[in-house]
Length: 124
Image (cartoon, rainbow, N blue to C red; front, side, top):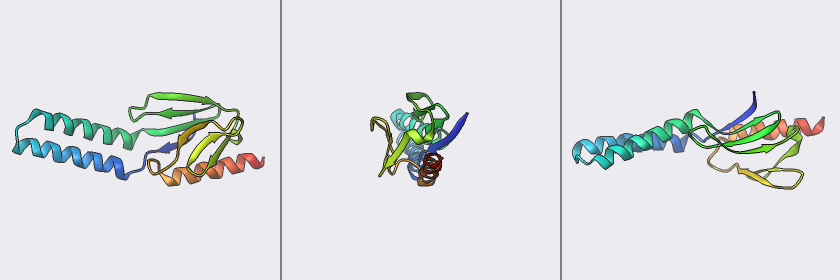
């Protein structure tokens, strides 16, 4: 059960899909198989970035994921009050360990919702 998900920003995945489609069209003009392979890989990566979240926060842990949806790292937490957002970095309050960067690669609306939930949970 995910309390909050932080998704990838939309411009980069859309650009990957468009560039992949252009590579596939370019393959029709110059019959090189590498163009088709690169086009398919870019399109699949773009679609996966649109569908899968970058970070999932549950009641007991923060999961950092790759575009395929696989969990790369898990950080145990007891509540959202264990987290802090200093600038563009999500970190743990206890030891200040950096979990993930919240820069241009993630949707800022999701980051704003995370900051609001962290402040609400810290006030309890």
